[in-house]
Length: 425
Image (cartoon, rainbow, N blue to C red; front, side, top):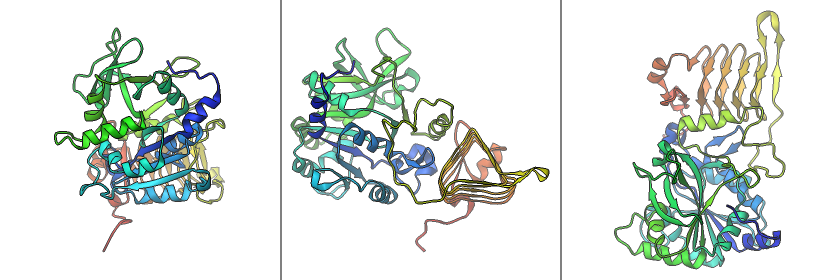
């Protein structure tokens, strides 16, 4: 169980001694066309956020204000988002969010794996002089107090602590999975095994890594150098570093549980189109598990200065009524004589007369033409949906033009519509 430090000053001291490194350079290929022009952490989520905003907000809300973001793959929109939305930390107070792109600081390669990404920035990390290093993934949706995780790490006199969640055994092959003893000390760790071990006595559940690690800084340096010198290593934390240290050092699992109820806390790996769509749809519920309206743990982001959402026309005789039901509507949206049901409309979306949008995620700057009908779809940023187009009603027809997930979610991008937003010539 998570530790309960006797007073807050203990935790605040630990967070000030910590540097967080967010791994944000992955391709995110399972999100298919949504990551064709952007890194996965930069994908829009929940109407007004980017995925990385949740990890960054967790850092700030936990009192960690020394943060490095490691970027590599198609990082332009991610970098611009961080510059615009996260530049409010004060350098004179020792606070920062540093962007650490792959720049071949220590060798002639780009980032070869998660461990290599941190290794290639060891000189910068040493300059910060942290006592603890918090390694985070930038592509998950959750709220977590990293202060409690750090206190747990120190209480156990651990060299490495791994945050973990319980997942169904049939899904566990997509994660690093561990075995633990009665004290939550890790005895085995396998990365993305086709036959992952289950929790003893609970064959239907496995203990999966969240990709969140706390290292004692000096211990991390030693292990990264050792890994870098190993020609057989793939230079990945889950595949190489963690299995290597388990037998000889103190490695503990931190169960990510609600401290009041002992129930699994909210965490979503939105790594597939179906998981991404479902996580967005969960937000629309009356009492969603992830509460974006929680003033005690706000999610920060960059917000464009846009006018309020507007609903226009009430011409009932001609069924031209601007209306939305069970939906989240962001700034700058105009619903002009159209109907929206159980959907998320991101910033600066326009839905024109007699159009219908249901069970869909509409990303920013989309224009939906008159009489168009959209169902169970994700419409990417900047799409111009032609008048009368139907999406999500005939999946066989949709597969000829768009991308259809195994769960039947249709993804539409400007390129699929013949609308070139990204071009060089």
